[in-house]
Amino acid sequence: MPLKPIEVNREWHTAGGNGPEGLFCLGDAVENLDALLPEYEGKVKLVYMDPPFMTGDRFFMRVRVGEDQWKKGRGGMALEAFSDKMSREEYLGLLRQVLTRCHRLLSDTGMIFVHIDYRAHPHVRLLLDEIFGEENLLNEIIWVYQSGGRSVNHFSRKHDVILFYRKTARYDFNIDAVKSVPAQPKPNHMRRHVDPDGRVYRSIKTNGRVYTYYDDEPVAPTDVWQDLSHLQQKDPERTGYDAQKPLALLERIVKCASRPGEWVLDPFAGSCTTLEAARRGGRRFIGIDRCPLTVNIARRRLAGADYGIELPRSVDAAPACEASIRSGVGFFHVTLEGFDAGIPGLPEGCAPMDAVDNWSVGYLRPEGYRVMAEFARTRKEGALRRELAVPVYGGELALCVGDVTGRSFYYALERI
Image 1 (cartoon, rainbow, N blue to C red):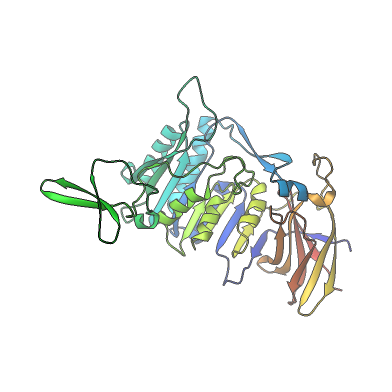
Image 2 (cartoon, helix red, strand yellow):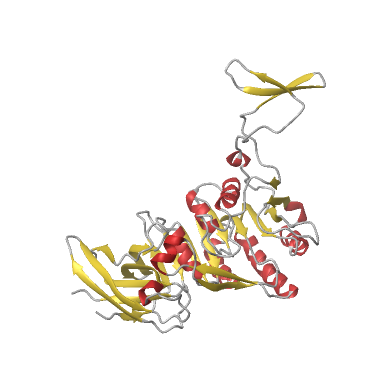
């Protein structure tokens, strides 16, 4: 049966917890940070941001359309994710507004990591010194990688800079959380020994004292990170979003600068890597991004979490959508029968239903649309699952379809 479109601005995903563990806000960073201040001021433990770098380029997301592209892991459409064509004045004006609000949101024990490259580094460093205080700079972390081409006109640029600041001297930094056993000991001039338990250690005598260091003793990273690789083009972790950072990088930052149950914020969430790292580590999270494609990424990467999505009012007319419902024991079985978003430029051979990236069924509540069952295409399950089972509750049933361009459409479902 044809479904009636409805307007929804809040979507809640429940995985059996006591409420949302996190929040994703689609829209402008400054506007959303202003909206967060009344509730979250002074409550955020960690801010990580990977803002534009003043490259002058446009960045895209390779979007997979239909079962075949998901199985092959190749995207058939290149859709713009964001434009990095701001002037220096516009860029620094935006960052000033974002950083000022992040400073207010951080707790007194909180910290901020700002990920940039050689273009923005000197300007952003001065901005952070101004807002956070130059005495609160803790590190300029150098993240070294080897991916990309090689230059013949200058030394190849193979590192980013991550500026690490505390808010106050009361900051809560946990270096032990990111210690690891080296893959192999570094060459050195110390004497090698083996203790009675078979453990290898080194020793050196200095000023009459003997110092020993075991090869399998966990050590902390320095401020040069060479052990975390950039994502390769065919890495299974890739979402298709340009400028995506590896999960291991964000997990290190989340672990050392926050603890389970604390809030982690990313105001330029992009590929949602920060949000996934926070969720995996038992942290609560807030992400903001203005690119609609990030909503589809969030639904996929945060599957199984309790979280909410805040959406701006839609200006797009809802496409025709058809679904059927049959009753079972304790469940409604909802079948998505048809959806045609009318998207121009779909890859050759794609049918209208191939444009469905994800869909869900739930109930309308005063706080918004409560998701009870959902499906999103993945490499393991690229074919569209057409039926979802929803527990029988009181209230109005609703359905949401997310298309490959990142638009979300909501419809009322009438029970038979």
